[in-house]
Image 1 (cartoon, rainbow, N blue to C red):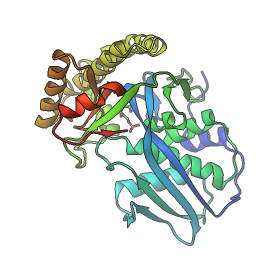
Image 2 (image 1 turned 135 degrees about the vertical axis):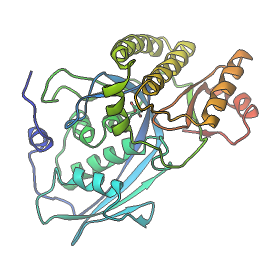
Image 3 (image 1 turned 45 degrees about the horizontal axis):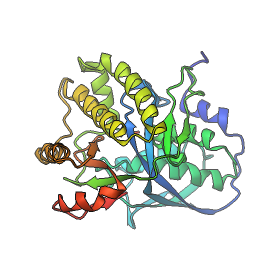
Image 4 (image 1 turned 60 degrees about the horizontal axis):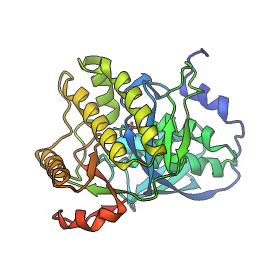
Amino acid sequence: MGCELNKKEFVQNIVQAKDIVQDEVSVFSPTNIALIKYWGKRNDELNLPVTSSLSITLNIGTQTKIVLADSDRLFLNGSEVCEDELFYKRTFSFLNLFRSPHTFFQVHTKNDMPTSAGIASSASGFSALTLALNELYGWNLSRRELSMLARLGSGSSSRSLFSGFVEWYRGDRDDGLDSFAQAFSDNFTNLSVGLWIVDAGKKPISSRDAMKQTMQSSTLYKAWPEVVDKDLAELKKAIGAEDFTLLGSISERNSLAMHATMLASSPPICYYLPESIQAMQHIWNLRRSGLEVYFTMDAGPNLKLLFLKKDRQRLQQNLTFPLTTL
Ligand code: PMV
């Protein structure tokens, strides 16, 4: 349904106003952690996913300022980023979708978390850019429309336009106009997300390339859409019932299944470090000893811990580093 579009044609379906109405804007966007992962695209150009996904929006994120300027410049956490860096190229090729020739931007972006450590700074980064453009051009778009634009920068950023639990629909159309994010629920006030950083360095392979390699070569990828359908339906029930045990176990198994499909790729993709495995085993041991804590992991070696607020102190006593709650 619908015909395939390129990014610019897609943008033209959503954005009409072209004139800049403010010459400086500053916005904040939170990041999110997927509990049911997005792994694989059915359309690379428009970042259309093979499956739907479901995330929780966090309190940390990205503050982005865009200033109209005489030439393009990009600053990340106060330091200038060179033109030949991937981060610069991704930022400006996204901005090029919206601006007319001879419009230049100075972009200042500040992350609350390490960039490229698998802690989804691209999610809040592209949603912040989208929110900034919405103000700069006075588009007045709905959150749903903004989620579709942010998706062109990075799929996971589509979910950062909403708070609480957020579902990003796969959609069926070839033109991508039915693949957007929507708030699912705001329950579960006693849920906490913590961070276990085992390594804050750059990841060995980008999620974009890793998804492609998995889809092309993993013998397990065929099963992935079915895994997601089942996990997504069960997770929604868990959220509705505020059932933490169910939420934690589904989220953990979905993340492990995603990494299993990557490990079965050729060449194999492994984001786990030896310390990641040790951390996972520590969490499983804590569960065996009666402390309910689960983990989820993205395209990186670090763990995001899921636990109940009432257990924070007990969990902290069983960790050797100060726990950051997100
Ligand atoms: O949107 P991207 O290209 O940053 O990919 C995100 C991939 C995962 O973080 C592993 C899963 C997800 O749904 O966020």
